[in-house]
Image (tube, rainbow, N blue to C red; front, side, top):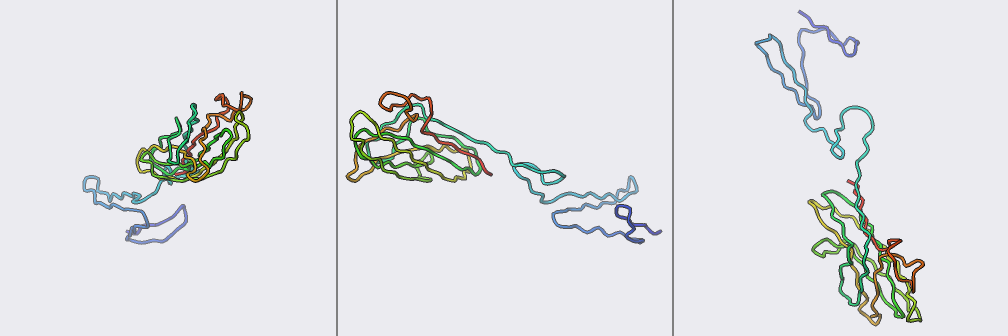
Amino acid sequence: MRNIIKKIGTLIGVSRTLNFIEGNNVRLTVENNSNTKEIDITINSSAIKTVTGLSLLGSGDIYPTSSYAVKFITDQTIISTATYTDITGASVTLAAGTWIIYANIISRNINVAVLVHGAITDNSNVVIAEASQGGASSGSATVGQFVNLNITGVVTPTTTTTYKLRAARGNTTITGSFTVMDGAGVGTTNNISDNSDKGTSIIALRIA
């Protein structure tokens, strides 16, 4: 007996024998079913990948799921030493994956020149990324000069990990202390923050 072989209605050939061949990432299981007197053929994928947990099989577009974490600080932190100090409340806890972390430090100094150092670190204080910016003397003991420092880093935690924002002042002749602000100080007495505009922050966006 010959078998007529077609693919989507198009004749492929006529033969007594069928030969099934496994292609890339395809696994075939062929068994003689004596109960039904049939040959059972099972076709499985052996290595189909996913994107953010979604199978690549089927039709339509796949858009990666995203997640983010944002923390605006609500307390001011006085920085008076050259050693990195935790900025109050400026930390985010991230799940395993790949994340971009954006950090912003707004600080003010009163009548002194300062060198503002900022760093994103993990919870063991290992520096992920850091940056520095100088702040000039204001010339008045009642008006604060602002420094706006931005830091960006990429992290790939393999388990849930906390990252935080830290700051330090310069350790040369520029030794004045400065205050990390919880807002930009708009419309408040002597440029002191009122928490309304949320200046210093740490933000993380998951990209994989």
